[in-house]
Image (tube, rainbow, N blue to C red; front, top):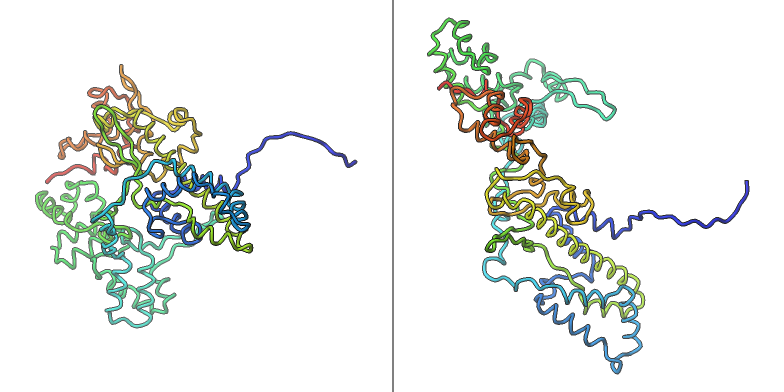
Length: 494
């Protein structure tokens, strides 16, 4: 063993904090970016926006340009001024201001209703199922033990409103044991004989049938509350397996009643709610608003991509405050660091905007037929196609297209929507898998509801009409992705 010096050249990727920040900003959604900008405005005193400073963007450009031309006349320079300029040059502030002055100005300040908060901020938040049940529990005359048991039941409801007492998987791969209502009752200190009675009271809360343990129990609770006839209750209680498969002949044979009577009973049972939590989701899908990151507009024969800057504050350096703080020798190091952070943040946000625009323009160029004629003409495209066209890595394209939305003449789409695998066509160019899904959806929408098409029949129709040759299991996979039931469960007899 010996100690010696050795000279060696090597290359390695160093993830600087600035690079990490740029990558993180790139994959943020629009709302997350707005939150990030607001946090930085609160934490960095040298950052400002037009609301805080009261200057328009046009005024900001003129001030930056004048500062560049002025360059601090020598006759007016004092010792303190030279120190201030030295600290500013260390963070390349003047160059940053010069770059800012060259940026294209955004449209002038908006007036009228555009300055008001969006209507989405004034909408009331929909209450979740748990909140709705807890409100009813507070109005109920329950003992302390019964109330604790009810809280445990409400806390174990799944997204459909059913009582889920199955065990959960631990980190080491093992599962916790399944529970029963008696276990919940014992934990709440409730007597075993009272447990099913309290559960029955909860199941009669609004919506009726909540906290049921399966579909049969959920429908049975509703049928009894709504006063259904004995035939319908008997079908729910003892013949659910036949009812789910629409096997009405078997029900008629086993119950020894006419087939028409089974049909009438089945029609009434179909009116019951199979998913009690349907109108009580944590996020109300009916009021979710998505703000697009880019707009695609048709200008004559070409499509133009415009970025949506509304809501995203344009940042700039607060010059007056920075000059005053740099005059304090104890604050120079602090302000210098804040200036560097502000400069990197502004550059990262601008780079993010340009990258999204470049990727969106590439998508528009490659998917022109889609923007002209619709989903049926969507072409196969993968991340590598766009990455090679814009000269970026596939991972960068993946970050750019995550949680970013594009408003097009065909509707609002996530950027990832345009990336599809290819499906071969007979005698024609390949077609995108999303187009195949829409073709399957249209075929099923136009089918005879009393004689629904099987997956194999859909395969034959696709090959005959569209020239698309795919396997039956592929049709089944796409049908499940679209949320469409199998043919046996789509059949309607009434």
